[in-house]
View (cartoon, rainbow, N blue to C red):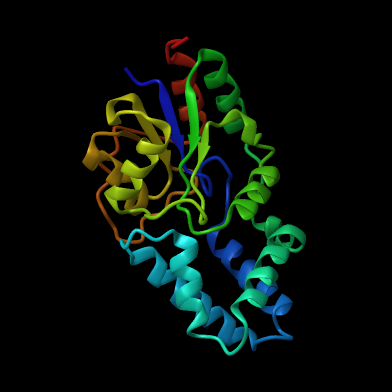
Length: 237
């Protein structure tokens, strides 16, 4: 019986215009680092290091893989860059909030699921540090205390769409695949949860399908349909 809901963040719990998000993100981070590095080079280096990190399966955390690769691309002290990244997410990341807005329906879903006794987790692709994830939760009026677990850049060693990512989440929360439902909006990133036996619900409001894969989700619907689905779920207390 399903007693655990794994939520993607961007485009699922938090409505998002992804293209607008990336445009604002790269503009503002480029501006913030411009005294250290030319913005176009910074963006290229971030993308290259992120691509490297996303592909790795070497028992290092995402943070370790990203920073080690990024350090080889820049001219400068990597510790200076690490501190600057951290300060950006704490003090300047909110400039990107204009690409998002809260979803009252999804926030109600979280409340209902908590009341019914479900274990809730944020299974976001761990490409951002915890502080950036927390800022995005704040933008969505989402309370981190409602969730047992959140995947992050500092903690996780695997990324979507690798099945190792989903197994890593299960290992952290000590759950079996049949206990869980993965709720997401990205067919390429979220449907692979099915490969280890996790059922899936694809939210269609901000649907992403960069690889044109078939939507084989167990459940499909917009925010309203998901809310209606949550209302019908049994208590698990």
